[in-house]
Length: 401
Ligand SMILES: Cc1ncc(COP(=O)(O)O)c(C=O)c1O
Image (cartoon, rainbow, N blue to C red):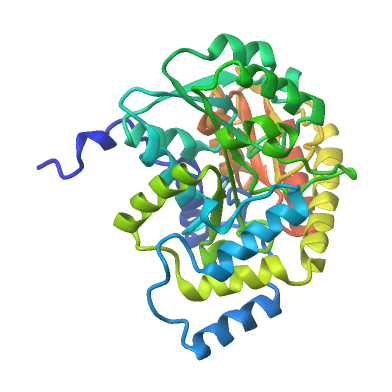
């Protein structure tokens, strides 16, 4: 008997989940595996945020919250967007959901007609495509290779837009490449979009605070005020405050879009956990020292990985401008032979070899629609990353090219 509906047929099992499981299985067999597959900060949630959750529970904030989010959390998100991003939203233009991921899902569910096209900048966060496929939309991947800094160009955007284009999905800075756009580049994309008012823009800014080399973050809607009414700004507390398990994300955009997303959310979950919303509000309203500390740690890790990869013949990595990943180019390894005589035909084979020989769990670039690359997460300590780089160096040197 077939249990799953056919709408799930195009959705492939997640590569990062597969990698994570393979790493767990190897560990269970007693193998020494370094798991660099996972995209979550390895820090603890700051204590004042946990205290805020505790106090909210004791105060009795234990009942169904409003579907679109508690007033306190919507206000905290609106204040944050005003303070940090120079974006003015009323509390009715904000929705709080179970993670940024549910904001994305709500937005797509609320707006996509069958076969509506959604433009994605490859390499992209794999779930974007899956969400669109589940909902019967048509993901359109625009290839943004390393040579263009993994960034979309205005020319590419212009030629990709059709009457069926519903959304452009941007991720600033991006997972998996850590791509960052200059202010002018964001405006140049905006100039193209202004000519096509039927296209909505979803700007996923979840890695906003993990930005390196002294860069200042500019939100897409702030760079393009004339497009604010066509833009859904998506953010959350998972990455910036080490709060992946609390499952709080938010979206801000035109009120009718937020209302439609709220309708979706009312049928899916009735809203996000009230206690977690109190914690997230404390994160946004409270001291921001931890955010800066986490970013500094991620930058030191990025520096270590970039330096060590540069010393490995056959691998390339331009310094990512933000987020906590390294998307390592491995073009030179395609066709290489392992010591067992196996040929490495693609990045999935390279990832499998690295897991087996070096004991490093990483995700193939194919999971992000750009090959041949291997993504490692730098959400691990400097010692762990140094150990992984030592092992990677030895395993790559063993290949016969
Ligand atoms: C680009 C991007 N957007 C959204 C998310 C999901 O964030 P949340 O934990 O808030 O659902 C992730 C998580 O890995 C991500 O990489």
